[in-house]
Length: 369
Ligand code: 3YP
Ligand code: ZN
Image (cartoon, rainbow, N blue to C red; front, side, top):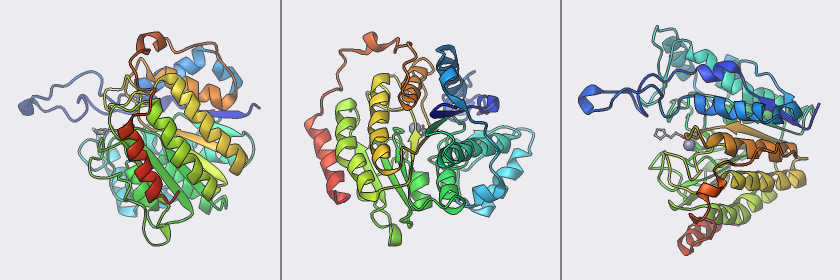
């Protein structure tokens, strides 16, 4: 037993998004089919294989995912929505979770349940004390899935399912979700909008996706007023902007809330190599962000920290970003370094720019920090 658990299941790599490039192929619109959809699961499988080939896997405690039950899903999603996915999953070619861009294949329900279940077993492993922290490399992702509709490649809100389970089944009083995926965690926000028992903090590229949510003014409502925190960063930001956002919003908000469990919605699409966003993080920066969250976790949650995989679309670079996060969690250096570090050096992004400072300061004020 080592301090870090790790979830990966072979069928996560079998999610079938069809032959569209990033949306369904459409001849009349000129959208040509292609062998790899931009969210093809091979990108995540390659992260798993680097964790394996680097030897880091030998220092991790394997945590096997169980499929989430219908009951687990219904803690955060509508029954109608679940039934819709279940029915479409029986069709020979599967279906779409709601927005026309979230396709899944025949039997896609089973993979989606195993993804949510991977987040659940990670939480079980951490809350029971079997491990101190855990990386759940699940697929499909979850943070765009709202209570009653799937969006942005997300079917079920894996991190949300896990947070609700920690609250309602394990009796964890307060859970915080830190979402560093480059896109807004609109689904998580929708699910916990009026609740004060799950704090949701999303740091993302302003108006990347969805383009109409994730503004600092969105703060939750009713009992949840102040428990949704958004830090939209201007495009082009790198570690300068992220470090400032984490030091002035994420960390102080976590200290104020004092969660007994922290869940990171861990996407790697804020990387400088990602095709779906315009931010500039390097692999090492993901290690630094992990350290920052671990330091607060040590202070407030007894170190209890679960990372749940979200997006990330550069098949060459994502494995290095993921490796750095898992190394940091485990406190072990695999010896495999970011092979692109030199190529990516000198491109900037390390400095905090005045307009980035302004955007973060605005979020600080709105969060009352
Ligand atoms: C979903 C459709 C267009 C942008 C895309 C974003 C998916 C993602 O990585 N979300 O975190
Ligand atoms: Zn994303």
